[in-house]
Image 1 (cartoon, rainbow, N blue to C red):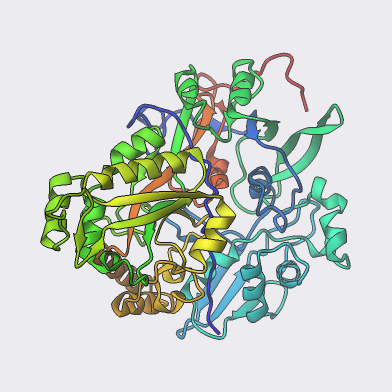
Image 2: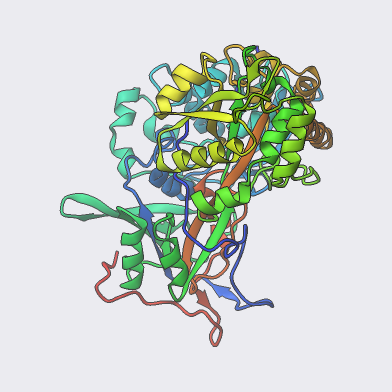
Length: 569
C-alpha cells in the first residue's frame, strides 16, 4: 500500500491585500512591551466573516471557509497543529508510534465531554472515521481512500490503535479532523446527516459551544457561541463570540466603523489600505500554505533547454520576483526559495536566495551556448532549437499580470514566451495531468496539510499519473523523500528535508516565485492576539483561549461596548 496525498494543484487562491511593501510583518503582534494587563473572564467579541455559512459540521466544511472558522471553535480533534506545522495534542492525552512506524497508539483525555455533558470516547472517533469511509461521504476521495486502508481498533473507551500497514510519518496530518458525537448522529444515513438539524445547531466539545442563530429577513445573519464551561483545557477568557456575515471586507469595515464588530476575518486586496488606515484596528499577517511557481515539462524532448539546470537557474535569475510581488500582489507575498513552506519545522532557511541579476542570467545562457543568431533575430538558439515555448496560466487578472511580467523579463534574455490563458479546470485536466504543457504558472495549495511531505510533487514515481507534473526524475531527491516519509525520528526527517531542499535549489526543476500571505484585522481592544504561519485561515484561532477583552480594574483594556443598535444576543 502506498499513501499518496493529493493536493489541489488548480489555482484557487484569492490573493490578499493592498499595502505599502514592508508595512506588515509575518507573525506581527501589535502592542507594547512588558507583561501588560492581567486578563479576566468576560466580554463579547464580534467578528465579521466575509461569506456565508452552509453547514456547521466538520465532515462538510471542506469548501466553505466560514464553516471551518466556526467549526474550529465548536469541535475538537485528536490533534491540532501549531504555526510550525508540529502536531499538538487536543483530545489526545498520550500517544506513541511503533519502532517500525506503521502503528500509532493513542489515549484520549478522560475529562473531555460534549457540550451536552456526554463523555467523548473512542466510539465517537470510530463513528467519525466510519462516516469518512462511506462511498457517499462528502470527504475528499483521497482522504476517504486512506481511511479505508487504515485498520482502526478501540481497546476501550479511551485507548485505540491505528494500523497503517506500512510506515507513513505524515499520518498525523490526518488526525486533525473534527470529531462528531456518535450518540446524536448514530443510525442516520449520509443524506440524513447532510440535511439534518445538527448542522444548524451543532454539538461539539471545543472551547466554545453553539448558543443560537441570529436570523434577519429570513436568513442566517449571525451565529452566537458561548464559552464552554466544561472545556477540558484552560477555558477562554472571552465569554461570548459572535460571528456576523458580510459580502466583502469593505462591508465588514463599515460595520467596524459603526461599532458593530471588533474584527474582520479576511482583509482582501481592495480594502487593505483602508483597513491599515483605520484607527484602533490592528492588522495581523501570516504566511498562507500556498506556493506560486513556474513548472517546466522536463520530459518534452523538443525543448531540451528545460533539461539544463544552468538554463533553469538563468531563467529564475532573470525574474525580478520582489517587483512582481509589489506589482501584482501589492507587496503581499514572500519571495520563495524552496518548495517547503517557511515557518515549517522542516524549512531550511540557509538556502541561498537567487537575486535578480539580468547580466548574470545573460552570461549563464551564453555559457550554455544559447546564442542570438548571427544572421539576426531576437531569440536565442542552440543546435537549431530556439528558446521559445508556451506558458500556460490561469485566466485570472493576477495570473495574467504575472505571466505578462515573466514574458517581459525573459524577452530581455532573448527567450520567446507565448502566453496561453485557460481556466483552472482546463489547466489541470488538459495541460498538467496529461503532461501536454510546455511551461505553466501554477499555485500549489497545501491548505490543511501541515506536514511538508513533498513526495507527491517531486518523487520519481509520481511523474506518471501523479502530481509530479514537471516529470522530475531525480534518484537522489527521491531517496530523500522516501526515507523522510517513513522515519519515526523528527531529527532524521529534518536532516533529510534539508538535504532535499539543498538539492532542489541546485537543480531547480521548477522555479519557486512566492508564498502569498493572509491578513486579519482585530480591534486594539482585543488583547492576546497573535498569528504565525497558517495552514488554514481558521488557524488564527489556535490561541483564542488567551484572547481577552476584560482586564483587572485600572488596567487597559476594559470591556468594550458596541454601538447601541447592535443586536444583542
